[in-house]
Image (cartoon, rainbow, N blue to C red; front, side, top):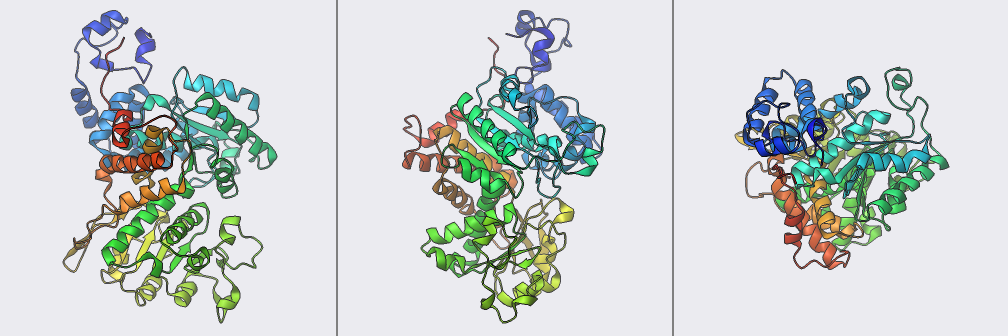
Length: 545
């Protein structure tokens, strides 16, 4: 057992001023703490006052991250009391500044593992040192090549792995002592980092060949063997690698790619919620994807799978999808399509003038979509003209501008409600205030992956599932979409972030039940809900041995 300053400097064991007099005497803390013994409630009230006193999001985040580095239990106790308020501070969009300035602000590694593609021989030692003697149930790993909205940030992207794990714990009760953030530094193509002497990552361009895949293979095999019950979450890998890596491991280990699968799940949940409100059916929708990258194609694949699950053949389901990227509408004869794009590319002979379909406005006018989802990071791309054109051909247009941060969103919720005379069913990628229009208050759902991936992860971990399957993902989406109050005027298509802990448990139970039904649980489980509740960690101080 650690003593003295070693104990105070361990964020998993530190209680600060809440160490009892008995603990202080036993563990060498007498005289190195103020004499008053505080409760966690009083500590949290004091910490919240400090948060409130900070003048802006940046200062609030710095304070909270400092608290996180010193005392995990107090941090999560405070976070659990203010989930809705703190989410945009500790995660998206507040995390973007932390990533951009990570090297300049670096103080502590926050128990992350930093892996260098230049030194594969140190990988095992790095994982061992970062995990110490802790058993790890969950790793979030990133190579930070494609952080949504801000791009390639190399080693600075470790913040996204840390931030994801914060949400896992705050929302679903994943034990923070059993998680590990990992960044794979494969280099960076961002010139500003390569030319910055303060940048803490490798100062060379990205490795993007067999060396890269060999390194990732080595990492996955290492952590899966070292932690035999591991759930592995891939985050913000580039367009050229994300799907390839997921396909490489999905049938071997319980792995999850948030950009491909998480965004798809929450978007499907939002669409199911919207259809619950409109009374329409998914098989009657025409889906337009604007921004056919990793996230956009991941969403399309998930909605497509849902159509198939609801009885359409694969060929019939594909007819409902149109993808627009930088080339315009994607056609199957284009030679620069990714494998994920090519599946849904259209034939030119479907259109009288295919050569004109080079922009979003032209495609909307040609196909009359009923669902428009944006993952383009092109701020303002859903113009009034485009939205009014869409709304002229469908009674309840479903419009999801999902790009973030704020300046990259394709449209504002208030504009979408106004341009459609209140008929649009809207979800945004950023937090949006309610919109008042003609006497109705429209609640705007946030299609934040945080609504889904914590519960999904808890369900996999609590059931000790060998794999994460399409059926497990589908039940997660349905469990969220079913929460919508369709009878309420202006109802949101997704539940609010304020209910995050409640429906994370619902998702976890549904996923655990499905894993058991598929026979994927690696040990006997009599009751899925009980397994979930027994797995959950709560932020209370434990008595030290």
